[in-house]
Amino acid sequence: MTNTLLLELLAILGRGHWYKLFNSQDLAISSIPDKKSILVDVAGTEVCVARNGRALSAFLNLCPHNQMPLNRGTFNDKSEWICPYHRHCFELKKGNNMTMSSAGNLQIFHLKVNASGVFIFKPRK
Image 1 (cartoon, rainbow, N blue to C red):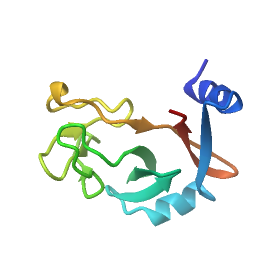
Image 2: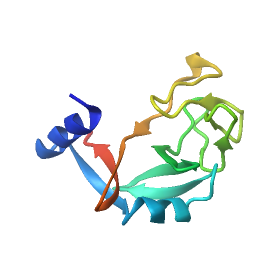
Image 3: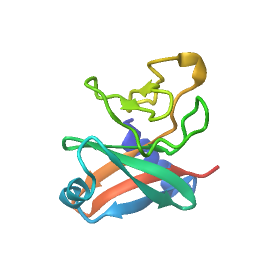
Image 4: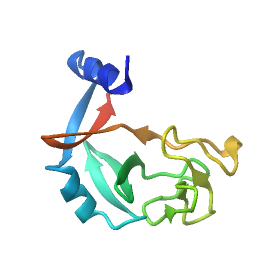
């Protein structure tokens, strides 16, 4: 079962919800500067939505190393997100800390893009 199908099932079971961020992928790409992020509020949670070319990623706006905001970071040449404070690098598929694994990993949010727009999944706590 793919991640999207599993998340769809969790949404049906009331264990999370898909929130619409943009009406289209093109709108998302034109709204987010390349190699940067914007902050969005997803049901009370501050999330960074970052763009690297046409690729979009979403993650909690909180560095696990020292709980600093990540929204002013950028991508490196390995497509990893760099924390603007202590330069920790995170890959954005699973959130792995590539600089110091003992400092913790990023909380990643799943995105889906379809004809209706760009959506983010937020699980229930």
